[in-house]
Length: 318
Image (cartoon, rainbow, N blue to C red; front, side):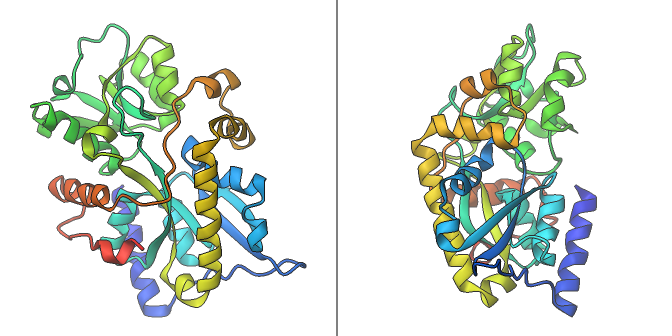
């Protein structure tokens, strides 16, 4: 996380001092814009794949290509440099980037919590037989998150606080989501913040969810969004408008067609068909829940992940 923050600071200085790639899309032989989007190959981005399949982007003269990144560490700099025209990232990562003056801005919603404890696509889980039974029990424990000082540990801390526990003594351990079920089963950590499909893997092995951290953080929490460089937004407003419209149609369609979402997951992930059929899907609204993003900014400031800076939501949200 510290390496990424340092990289973002250098990237912001370079962009301010020497200009950065505009991310111009280019055209195919039919006049459509060639657009690359940096994504993470997880359930959250199913709508963009489904929208591509349904022709929502091609109908707006966009020839779409998705490129997988490990997370914001690759996608945010990729968008700023012009490697990608658009990218997908959780809101806390985008807020961190904004506090370091990285020239990006949200252009479309990405994914949201269901807002229902017991029926969300992410939560804090423990292995079978664990003595941890409630959020307050997580105080002082070792908990796996996919990235340190990000949306995982800030929302987990909020679950503990709301349950009357003290999150100060929690030790967070950085482990990729895919490796968390095994790490939990082996006792490397006491608990793990997992999202689908890792969440289903943990519960299938007898594990239990003891805290629904997205639900505890804010009602209908906006978890992630699609974004572009401010230069692309200024230089090619028409492309951004068409991408946003196609993305919104994709989000709406995905929300209304869960069976097609489960099917399209097989095109870009290796999730077993039986797991795809059973996992809990998130929500895909087109509207960003601004108050929930304000909550993420507040939690991040409280937990010190912005290095003393205060996120300016007017500069990152549309």
